[in-house]
Length: 610
Image (cartoon, rainbow, N blue to C red; front, side, top):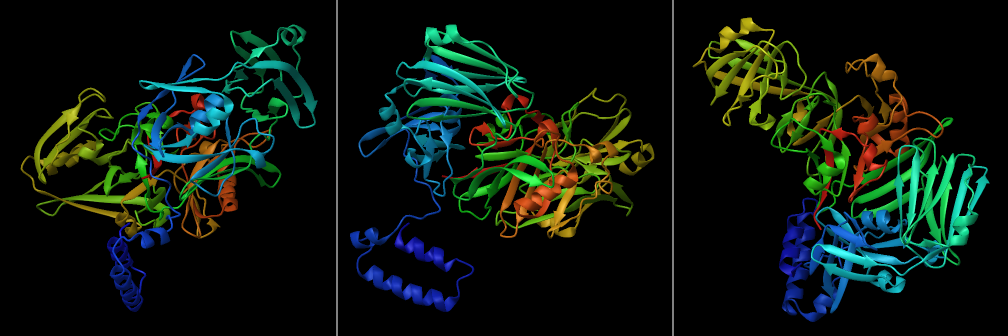
């Protein structure tokens, strides 16, 4: 930052008192007198700690890697630095394709990793780069030390690791489960593929024929079956495990080993500053006699360059769902969690989604919501939106919903934010077209889903359901006035809103009342995987996914509220859960195998400008 722009930024800082600024300005004039931009000034400046290193213009980049002949969908890039060609691969890609584990760190610009290291103290540290929603780790030195051949070819990065051998395979029962160990003659890439009731570990190493011949299939305390297979230069282990169990796979050196621990409490504690203002946390949280694996992100919404906004699979229409992984990548967010409820049959939203002061979908049933702005201010409460159309004669007609998939008798309103057309949701709807605040047409549609009706770009549609008597108020030429208010009223001042429910916490207290938000008894008593968003006392957001308790089922709504309290939330609202519960970071799903995550209608995304 130049000196002049630096002092102007101080002048614009709202918390700076005028006398303080005057003294600083005087100092600035003295500095300027010594020479603008002089080497002495440049040497005295220290890098801003809240920013990661700028990513140089890529010399090459692509979206797939060819690892030892296999093609994998992984992002990579190369750049020049100090006359050296550097290679970066997304941290998600390194974890999935190579088996590299990320260790805890308080420095977002440096990522220590574990990969066949004697201990965490001797683990290598890789520099980080942010670009297009991904975090790249500089593998240049690690690749050289490991003997990898790395070569870019078009959009593909070719990586060849030295030939390796599996020297031994061991299996033993433990008090907490089972441990399986592969001894190798040297480090080798490995991948884990979790299936429904099977976990497949593939190692880029040829197994010694004697080891394969001596192998005898057996079971363990938790492992139901073990199969050892050899194919070309790979060794594959197939483990039959109970559904939902995710083994921990890790490595050690001297000798080189891949260790598979099959245990219910396999989740490793993590506190990793992924980027400035964004921390990845996970641990097993104790709640009475229950223990829940919880994965969450702590987000500082006031961090420069970071913003939080609702995300949609397709912002041009409110119809449609997609895996959160796909939606997050399309929106180029670095992190995301699933958002509000929706109808899985017609793929329409059932709750509020407001972005940039526009209601893409309106709230329903006075349900819990979060509202926030770019300054990091937020509000958690139950939310309703009341709209009324007023005719030129003063007749007031209340509306039931705005841009919603929730069907109710009365009059609903649909704007261009819903999409270019509206498809009738109930039989015998009467559609009133309004342009420039004047009724221009009226038509009746007998069958739901039969005829898409255009939504005027400079107006809206009024949809009359089981309310034919109201049609007489909307004859063509009628001038209309629209009133719109939220309850609580201050929700209207926030540009971003996502509603799901029920509301869990307010001012540190559990305020759960699912009945008041018109949830069913089945939903209220259900134990399921759950997601939620909360706020801490210092204003940070907690974006949380909690899955089945160890040895049991998922959390109740009350337990989710208690978990949010334990994580430090003072306000919180429940989001859509069950198979929708999905937490995304930098190209990967953190809380579950990606194939088990359901398609969702919307989410809450974290954007970071490098």
